[in-house]
Image (cartoon, rainbow, N blue to C red; front, side):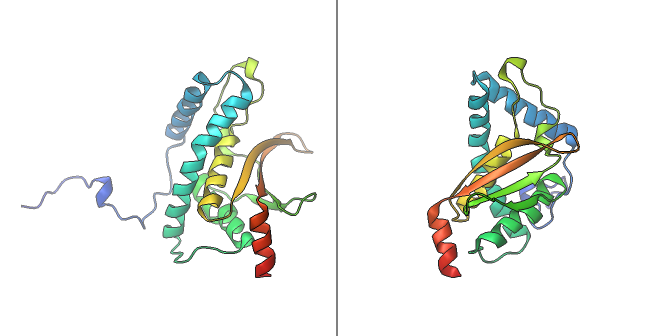
Length: 188
């Protein structure tokens, strides 16, 4: 006899993406994650490092999921198409809008993802003695995890940037290892 009940999560197809997650549910879960990291941290730098560490494995898994959903049968081997995929497709799925991809001016191996309204920085409150905590460190960890999983070893860090017209934005600074840049030069 066939069971006619609610489908479990394992019975649903991976291809059908759920477009929306309740903002209040996400805010609650992320605030609890920050609180968990806060209990183990004594200074702002340590809190951001813990958030970054949590983001790395999440990014690796997210890359696999979004590559599958986009029907990408092959892995990107070039740097710019990979960064564009993260800034456009993945960012849109995660945050509902795209990020600005910028090239660093000082170093060849630096790129930046700029987001004027990064969702993880909303709804978070931390004690004043820790100063200005940028919860974008979690997203920087996700970006680092995505790039490392795709064989583009890099270090990513989150920075708050003041906008000229007022307000602030979060910039994810990505510094690629020299092996990535030499491979890029060889591919021409």
